[in-house]
Structures are given as C-alpha cells and as structure tokens.
Image (tube, rainbow, N blue to C red; front, side, top):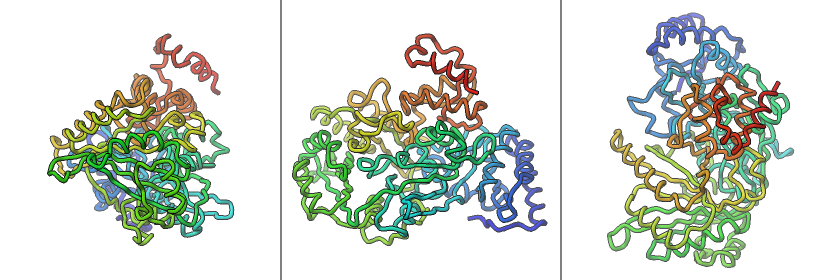
Length: 559
C-alpha cells in the first residue's frame, strides 16, 4: 500500500510534473487542471492532499485500484481504469474532490468497500476518477449512550470488533460479510441476520455527516430531514459523499446459538423447504433461518438438490430447540446440532470461519471469497407450492452452477412502514431471494455463460415472485434492470430500475435529488435521476398512475 507520509517540496514538485505529464485519451488537460485544483484547495498541513493522489505513473496506483475490487469481472486487462484515485485522508479532501470535479466537469466514483456486485463504484465507460474512502475508517463507541460514530471507509468486521471490544452486551444489525464497507452498505439499507429482531442498519441510524454538492459538511440538522431520509436506504452516492454515520447499538444476550443443517432431495428436502416457507417469517423474532438451495453430488453419483438451513438465535440452545420443536419440527433439529457462542463468534461462523477463530480476523480487509460473480434478487410474497419447488429443483440441477438464497422476513421487518426509509420491502414479504453464480475461470466466453445461467434461473422464477413491479434489492445492484446514461432521458431510464428498487419511494427520492443536486453531479449507472428535461414529456397516463402531477407541482415550488 502507498506511503501516506508528508512529501517534501522537491518530491511535491516532481509529483506535480508527473501528474501534469499524464493524459488519458482526451482527458489529459482536464485531469492536469483537476490536479492543480486539488493541490491548491485548502487542506490541513497534517493531511496534505498530495499524499492521497495516485495516478498510473505512481507505482502504488495498481495496488490501490485492485485492493478493493471484490468481483474479478472488473479486474481484467480490458477494465476501464480511473485516470486518478484520491484516497481521502481528511474531510477537506472530499470537499476538494467534489468542488474541483464540478469545476472541470469530471465523473467521480465513490468507493468504500468495493462490494457492489456490478463494480459501479470503481468502473465507468467514460473518463473518471475514484474518491476512495478506505482511509476514513475511525469508529467511536459510546457504551453509556449506546451509540457509535463510524466512518464510511470502515468495514463491518471492524465495526463489530470495536463494539465487542467495548461491550459484550451490544451489537449492531448489518451484513454477514466482514469486509463490506460501511458507506455503501448502510446507505443502501444494510441487511443482515438480526433484521427480524432489530430491522435493517438504516432503521438504527440516528445521524450522519455528508459532503453535499456545494462542498459543505452537513449533519442531520443542517442537511434536513428529507436528505437524511434519502441517504438511509436510497443510496448515498446519488446525493453526496457520506463521511460517517451515527448508529444506535442494540442489546445482545451473553449467549447466542448458531446451527447449519442440510437436507438433500433424498432426505425429504422438498417437504422441509415447503414447510420453511410457511413458518420462517412467523418464528420467534430472536430466530433467523436462512435457506440456501444448491446442487451437489448424490450418493448414486448423480446430481441432486440440497437445502441448507443456517441460523442465528439470540438465546441459548435449550430455548432454541424448544422453539424449533413447536414451530418447525420438520427440520428435526437436535441440541447436538447447535453451537452456543458469543455474538462476535457468531459473526465469524456466518462468514464461514470455524468457531474458535481469533476475533482479530475481523480486522482483516482481505476478501476471502475472491471470484468472478453475478448476482440478482427477488422477493417472495407467498409460498411456492411443492409442484413449483419440484420445477425449481429440476432447473437448478440443469443449470448446476447457480444457487438460491432465501432470507426470511417477518418480525421487526413487518412492523416498520414502507415509507419510513427509502427501503420499501417490508410487510407482505416472506423472504428475499438472492441468485448467485461464482466462478474462477477468466475470459469473456466463460463470463457470458455464467451470467446467462443466472439470467435463465431468474426467468424461470418469474411465476413465483413479486410482480408489478418485480421488486429487487438495491444493495444487490443489477445492471440487467437498466442503465442510466445520465443524458436527456435520465429520468426515463432511471425510473425503469428505480421503481423496482424503491417502489413508491422512488417518487420522493427523485424530488429530493432534484432539490439537493439539480445538476446531477452525483451520478452513476443506477443513480437516482433528477426530474431534468425529460420530465416534461411524461405522458398524462404515467403522471396519473404515479401521482406525478402533484409531485411535479410540488417540485416547481421548491425554493
């Protein structure tokens, strides 16, 4: 990793010469002027911005770019690279990036952990630079007030570790992958195995710091409730640069219990999965049972279907077995299947580390499952019949390389109104479905094949999932749903995927975006659009359907 120390005058001059001599396609003069702007912007002497600038002429550029690429699809020789990476060391560096990029009309991508499945935070088809947040990772835990401030560049593993370091009685509801960055995860919803008890990450955020399009560092009070609402589930990168979030910690028991039980088709998996659909969202709020459907080699040498049930229970094994015997006896859970442990160790268990692994593994930023990936998502509104499950098993065995993960709803998720945050997928859902394909072979032909397999399974699932719209999860970004070219048809293009991600909340997000960033500076391939020029040609039928008449008039009255 790069040396972040202060550069002397001679080295700074040499850096400036190297930077100014670099050009990327037709953007050379713009990038040189942009760098001048960054260097001349106000910055504290303790954090010179020169130490945060990396271009292809810098020997550390490649390692900085690649270190937070979590999907190998976007780490190839043909991947478009940024003309510059700014690894912000201070809030003033973010402010400089925002103001200078606007001045020189440059595309900015914002990266925290790099786990977005489509590489939207670090890849672009147009000349661009990356504002990388990984250095801004401080975490301040206040056990007395049961709150914490966590910067956007911190990882979930770091957050969990620091909470447990201060208190064995607290935790936080968020994702199960420790190397996910806080910034993108929280701003898109924040989904994890305690959501049935405590909701999403965004349901436990009480303040935030954000740099807006004018370069101002705002908190909840100064940004206002509308913008604060938008960045808790609507994607922070559409509205500004999230610097940090203030969260409410949640109470954790001293002992939690985890288990993983697998059943093949020959072991009555279809009947057990059918029953899971009827009970998973109605179980005790302390119990979360994830279901994974995949394909394995059977005892007869042929492929067979497998259903894996992975659980977190906020309590001891004796109570868990009692709950399961009453509510889900079909799984046949025994006390010997259960592992009692601490909450922090359960985090490691869910991240596929053996129980007993040292907790400091959570501080590692090395992603353990590096592979080529494709993801899609759906929402299950009602149980799939046994006949339907048989069809799905058949399709899975045909495709071989794609698996389905069902995350159950109910509990707290059914109690929070859909309009409370931009994340709308609340009551009425039995589970969220993730489609996952992972592969290790390089090459366009191989990649196209696996992506096509994932799309086929997605198509096969159409009869069983949500409709009008077919809902999807924003944190599982999927460019198959539509791409925004951020031109004259930005609103029309944005609505195609926006309604699927945000349903009725898309209307309010567009209004807020238009107010706080009317020039659409904060943009990417699936960002929230502004009303823009194309809003004028929305048909009367569409306006009546979505209620845009009153919404647009409201926008016109925005000061």
